[in-house]
Image (cartoon, rainbow, N blue to C red; front, side, top):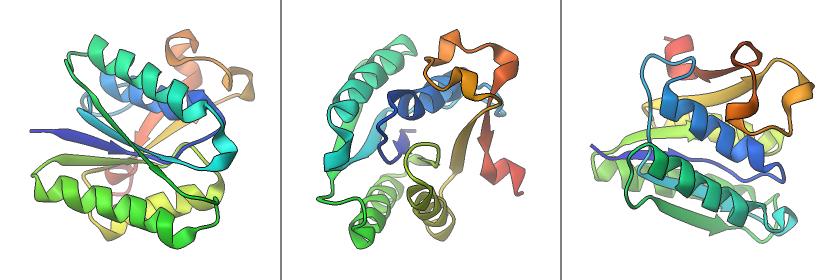
Length: 163
């Protein structure tokens, strides 16, 4: 079964890749989640962050056995194009579900309204997982996942927390 990860973008590359890295090893969740396909949402304020996150994501997924990871990037012209942001999630979720994939939405990266839209899309369209990567201290904000001490971070799956 294919695994699909859908996320927004962020100026903070770590906010995009750390949840994926944690999911791949199953940190904080019942079993590892290794996506074959990842969807990011880009906007003009992110500069090169999406490109860097895409490259790191491909490396992470290859290290976890995905030979040819697929990274899809949708773009909005402005971060307040709410209909387009909703469309990013809805289109990706529905396409993945039609293909019988296990679908995860990551609410970690982006502004609060991006996370709210992502969470709502996850519940509205009944995804399999809604992930959030929690750092217990701002001391670790600029670190890549393997360099964060285990007790300082945890990946939550809100479909398990709210069950």
